[in-house]
Length: 155
Image (cartoon, one colour):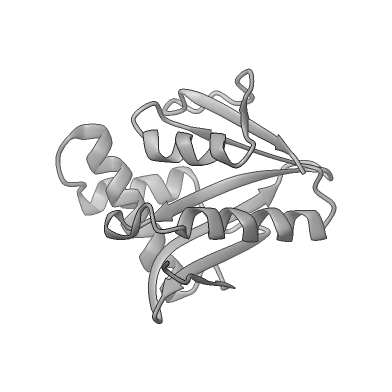
């Protein structure tokens, strides 16, 4: 079994920004079926910045950062999961679950009773992860042009 270490980091720090850029390049590539350009990654960051996150976490195995996740509070009781990512080579090894648990624990510690998120249809691994951890599909709560599925979990 792979042991993940999850720790809170500054979302604007180098380590977090490297993982966020890797995450965005991954989902852009999956969306378009070709490698992401630097301009596309920069545009995605500008469209949905991380400067309002309540917390951000990096997941590592043997000291190697392989995943990340964060959340923002959208109301006093509702957290929104953002940027959950695990490198493709490390998927299926428990990193997503470890990062999700860290987000949920931190959100509860500041008053959240619900976590919500949106995701795309092609991100099937993510949708399976959320369902396994008690997230249920709900009606759309935003107009994100890339969102196909909306999930929520009571904490």
